[in-house]
Length: 385
Image (tube, rainbow, N blue to C red; front, top):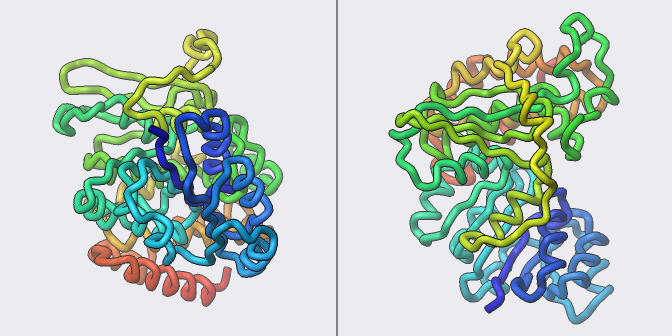
């Protein structure tokens, strides 16, 4: 029987990779739903490629275009229609909408799917307690899709957290891993967007250059695996071949390595728990013999120090931190601040008392998170940056 699939955010990089895999195996998969924010042309192309009848497009222009384009398709403009589209639990959902806009759809579809693979890091960082409640309530299996978290998930393999001594997440270090500190004043936007290993959107590429993406990934790991921050460390690894290392209390250490290709965790999540061959490259012994794993240079990447003062339990502060970072990264992308000022301002503003107070407040619902995002955004607009 074919697995029934939904892809939230199918026109983004993760969504496209998922579509690419599914197009080559229509015998085993039937895609029920595809969604996008604005890219209606790509969404329509995907619907024809995979023969998908149900589409959600948030952009009004795109919605009107698709309604006229093909009368046989079921076109919707928001996620309130999930009850109409998914009348029974489907087998698998890929949630890959970027940003906090992906939170509500992610929470809403959990009850409609047997397995949810989440690539939306903001949801896991800001609302893990809300996600976990729904996963338990509706008996939905969760699979993390970030290469680091998928690797940890694979290595732990249902072992108790008490058996884990240390988790290491690797970071490529972005384009500036070998740049001398004295040259950071001269970094241009074009330099920051030249990631040596991964092809990603502009925003996440900048987060990789500052290593803020690793701060977020440590928060994700703490939430997903319910493990203390002290047991999680970041190691720089420019080749992005090793994605995670787990040291267990019994003396064993497991390392997971694969090419820097997001199709590998996506592919394995789609076929889980089955084992299906993936045509990958041969093991690269040249890289394995020169892993070049190092502790993070905190002078070069000062944002990693944010991890020293994060709350132990889920709080609204994580939403404030994401909103502050998003705002300032967009300022950098608009060339309104330079790279060094970007990192300084993230550190400075995230340490202000008016944001630190949210460390003591747990998100009770989605509205708490969205209200705080609006509050922090308005505060950021009032600052002289």
